[in-house]
Amino acid sequence: MNAARLAVAACCLVAVSSMAVAQHSKLPKIGVISLDFPDNPSCVDRVRHGLEGLGYVEGRTHVLDLRWAKDRLDLIPSLSADLVRLNVDVIVSASAPAAAAVKEATTSIPIVLASSFYPVEAGIIKSLAHPGGNVTGVTHFTPELMAKRVQLVRELLPKATRLAVLRAPGRLQDLVVKDMEIAARGLGAKLQAIEVRSAEDLSAAFDTAVNGRAQALMSTQGPFFWRLRAEIAQLALTHRLLHALGGADGRGGRRAPLLWARRHGGL
Image 1 (spheres, rainbow, N blue to C red):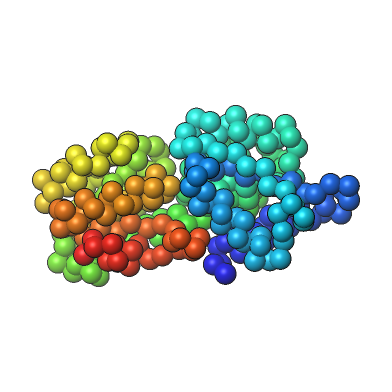
Image 2: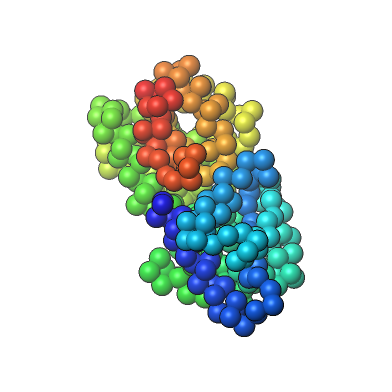
């Protein structure tokens, strides 16, 4: 089983176990908030698979109460408040950008981050080793990991001096770009950040990268770019750009971003 998926499931079980002892008459209820759509529940599926891997069966040992934000961060506060009113035993934030908003909803109900985006810098936890408060979980987004992605691109293109990165709006995205820029400068390369707000912006973004003479292209990662992975792969192939797009594979695990790019024709 994927280690991160197992960790999330274990956190959920620890959070609800003491409550389950005191509440024999009802099953522990796990509230899950995701930015996904109901017809593309990749993050939620990872939570389900993690629990199943530990022998827990939905409907028999626990109940999942799902809330879908459908790519709208502005809905997260109301969805979180709804789960708090229902007094669920634990809330799982299944999408990294939603974590901060979920934390604002409660200081008493345990919160498990199935994915988080710079959780220390965002003020969600005190530190990775000692999160503090009512929050625990895993993260795939840290300064070290973002810098490593730049280094991996340079390993494939040792002579590359011009790199581009697709980014979404937001302060946390600024942090990602900053760490990538520092890593690029350390390798003697220049990083061009290109903002993408919707799928309609992709074609123009690639034109900007090409006009800037980029030799490779990355993204700041996250659900938004993962959902657009097919479009990004096709545009990278059309423009003959190496592209590194990190994300989850179809089984809920993590796939190295450059291997994904190679498989889909980005090289």
